[in-house]
Length: 395
Ligand code: BGC
Image (cartoon, rainbow, N blue to C red; front, side, top):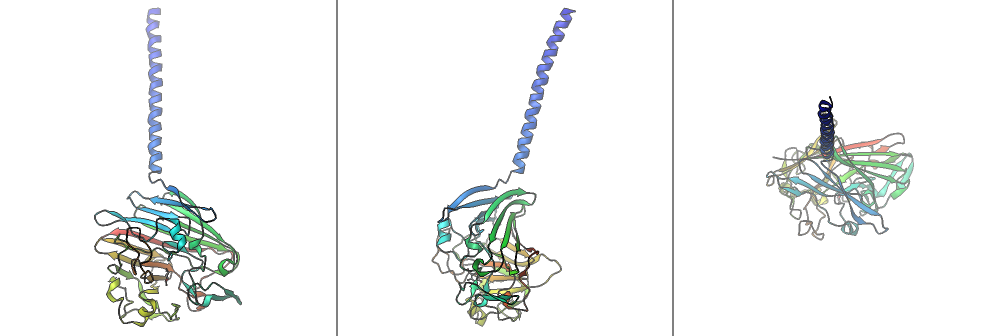
């Protein structure tokens, strides 16, 4: 029995050893499965680094959002600025397609709103004044006689709080900022949240939200200057623009809309079919003279969808196509007319006149003073909500 028992004990021990090893191996396998799963859920890790330091010591963070396709978008907490955005050309080469700077100092030294979030009010308010419920509010006149892009220290010049995370829609960064009652002359304490999400199909989806504790006006936008050629110091005249608009808003000498909705048909402002920016930009036209090129708000056609295609830009040489979707009623197409070659470009050379164009989705300029324009009023208890998506592809 003993003789029989001995081997059985031996086998039992052996079995136990193997089982234990097996279990351990299973555990290891499970563990490596878990590691893979972890890697999968974190396959687009969002890099967070320090971009620079404000004069008061506040650190400015930089988040790099990535997707599976290889697109990368750098967002800094100063101004919510997109400093770099890579997109593939038709050969699959990724290049930066937005104007920007390498260092925080350059942004602090003076930037024409490169890549920045704009608030509380995108574009101009005539004479820096508007009335709400019988009270007149006075804002900074930081553009001749008018107020531009939120004033002396708009949302493009403040440090936002930034939190990045991976979501099922893609890597995103949520920026929040509280603008105090009276800041830059605007009434009401405004809590703002802007979320940039980079999706798997090369779109940057931007969601803007705001709430106030007093009636106020709000019109937020994004001021990226695009150059789809990837050669950021070159002019953008060779890009084809499409604007889904039958009318635009003519301006006066201070670039304030006159209040007229003018048909684009038969004018250089007609982009209902894609047209090269350079084709008619130098045409003899009073409105082009006033804007020194294109610097106007187009009245977007109302489609069946609430969130439709508003505009596109195509660069034939590289094949890059940018599509802009929004639920805003207007789009400011600005052809970079005030760039003057004094600022250094990231890719060498300088940012010359018309080396970038902006497609700023928004309510119309000067709406607080124009009764016929859609309202930009926000009341306590309401949530300002606006969405714009910039989608890149090639053709
Ligand atoms: C305006 C231009 C202005 C530019 C500032 C644009 O949104 O329409 O007139 O010069 O911003 O960079």
